[in-house]
Image (cartoon, rainbow, N blue to C red):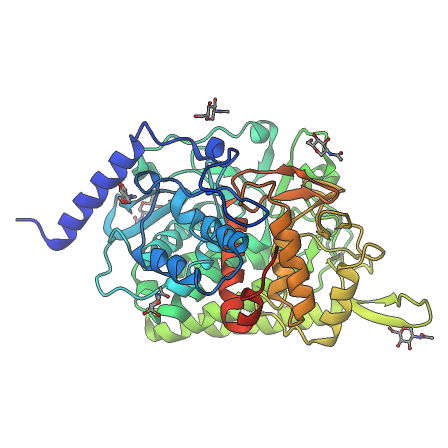
Length: 528
Ligand SMILES: *[C@@H]1O[C@H](CO)[C@@H](O)[C@H](O)[C@H]1NC(C)=O
Ligand SMILES: *[C@@H]1O[C@H](CO)[C@@H](O)[C@H](O)[C@H]1NC(C)=O
Ligand SMILES: *[C@@H]1O[C@H](CO)[C@@H](O)[C@H](O)[C@H]1NC(C)=O
Ligand SMILES: *[C@@H]1O[C@H](CO)[C@@H](O)[C@H](O)[C@H]1NC(C)=O
Ligand SMILES: *[C@@H]1O[C@H](CO)[C@@H](O)[C@H](O)[C@H]1NC(C)=O
Ligand SMILES: *[C@@H]1O[C@H](CO)[C@@H](O)[C@H](O)[C@H]1NC(C)=O
């Protein structure tokens, strides 16, 4: 006689297996580049971009109800279509596999691909799920039920914990062996020389990015703070994974490039790649630019997966501090189930990091009128006094600091920093144009604005005029496809990159749901 759990497992396994073999389902990489009827009825005539129900990778009746409800909240037909396409995009297309650990049938696993690349990024998967916080409810049966968003969160947290325990310096991972899915071949990484070494059957790419560590703490904190399900965190490998995250961050904070006697210290992480792009490898034979100990944590790469110019990436340190505090709350709640002193250690690390950000991450610049000196957050510093004054579209960015909860958008240093970030005269990666003006970055390059940065600008603004202007630009630059692309030529919206970028799609939906409560009158407006 089978238990309820076994029956659920059997039915889920069958569902996934048949979904995998649905030969009539188009490849979404192709589907997302083609227009599908019915078009939206406004002047932008946006394509319908959801796969047919039988081809979706996850069904949620709560999400369907929310999408339906929003049709009476969002008045403009084109804006509603963009929401309808983007909000469910991760569920519709990117839940590549769900199952259980081979050595523990109670441990849920979820492998979520980034979209057009068949691998799971720590950052993307945490953010892909973040979009569904408004529909996350704790479920009574902690076993993988077909429609449970909570189960998806647990599956991602468990799989990220496994990844971090074996390869804490890596950013992107292969399907778990339990899935039976073949590892993807990463031709870009063919020439990579990385220490510590990694197993390419488990790791897709091994760029050490501080925000990947923060992403694990983020998805954990967000699951806990919404469901209050503390018990989950004591069951599997979460606590050891948190300790691995702390050890990795400490190793990247405690030592600089040189020892007291001037000798070059062995770096816990090095990376080189044969490439024609400077942002795809590290200077100094894989060490990166020299750093001095400041209390900040080094990051070899940015959330764009481009290398840092100076290794103390300030927004990544902000995000890591923010979610160290969040995850410390879970550890504290676990009481004697957690290692003694762990929550205190995390809180102390957070306080030290925040102090180091205030001391080393805030730098003087000459004001725009040239007559005074003001302080702003630098994007990157090195502890020697050098600062990189810019922002990049990928989150964590400086622009997003209030979005991920490090500071309030009224913070004076943030406001001055924001004014520079959003100025083509002060941020070398602000892309100004006739189609869209937004922060971009070296990842796709000059001239290419990132709609993701326009979305973050809305999420961090209280100014109705600014919000409406950003919504108009985003809506006008999907090339009729009704999806959020990675980047758009700021002067020609028919030129864009990445047809299927699931995180950016979800972030757009999340932003519209945020406006529903914060600025409902804006969603009543026409954008024609
Ligand atoms: C995309 O799908 C269309 C229609 O099914 C097909 O004609 C086309 O060849 C496909 N393109 C690619 C690049 O697979
Ligand atoms: C979602 O529901 C449709 C029926 O509406 C079904 O055909 C499909 O297999 C389901 N997908 C999953 C992943 O369960
Ligand atoms: C949709 O709206 C109905 C009626 O207002 C409400 O009862 C329901 O909870 C809403 N569902 C969601 C998912 O927001
Ligand atoms: C279960 O298997 C995974 C993947 O092989 C491994 O990382 C993990 O350490 C194992 N867990 C236990 C408790 O043995
Ligand atoms: C120049 O700008 C600074 C900071 O924005 C402001 O405090 C100062 O009053 C301005 N000076 C003049 C002469 O406009
Ligand atoms: C915009 O880009 C498209 C696609 O590359 C091209 O066909 C078109 O000529 C460009 N428009 C202008 C005004 O340059």
